[in-house]
Image 1 (cartoon, one colour):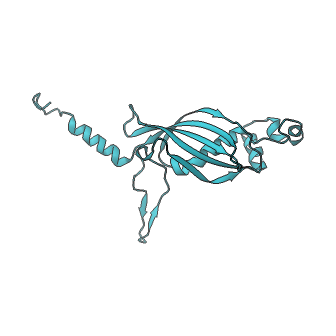
Image 2: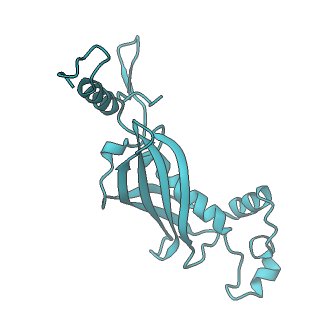
Image 3: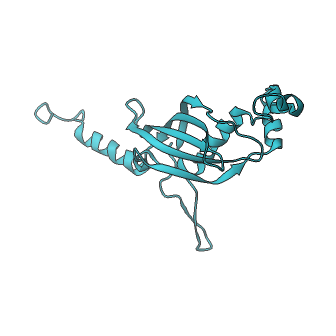
Length: 192
C-alpha cells in the first residue's frame, strides 16, 4: 500500500506536523539534479567498523604500516562504505518512504580515492522516469549518483534503478479512469 500523499499529521494539540518523505514518481523530472547536504566526513572509525562488519580484511583499509608502502601512502576508505554513504545521502530527499524496492546498481566506479578526514558530498541526476507496466501505482526511476570530496574531485559514481510509489491520489485517479472506460458485466454489446 502506498504511503499517504498528505504527509501532514494533525495533532490533538492543534499543531500540524509534517513528515519528511521522498518523492513520488510524478514528482521526479528527467534532468533534475539534487544536491544532498550536509556532506559526511569520513573517519578512521567508519573505515575500520565498516570493513570489520563486512568481513573485508583488505590491508589497504586496516593496516596503516602496509598502506604507507603503497601508491597512495595511506589507508583508503573502503569503497563500499563510499558507495553506501553516497546512496544513503540521497534517501531523505528522494526515496524516504516512497521507495518500493531497490532494483539495481550499475556503472559503479571510484575514479579517485577517499581518505579518512575527507568529506563526501553527493549529488543525484534523474536520468529516466516511467510508469511500471506490470505494477499499477508504481514507477521506475533511474538515478545517477556522483560523490565528490571537499576539493570537488569525483570519488564515486553509480547508477541506481528504483521501484517507486506513484502519488496515491494519482493512482486512484488512474484506476477510476480505467474502471470508467471498462464495460461492466451488465453492459450490452451496443454500450461496448
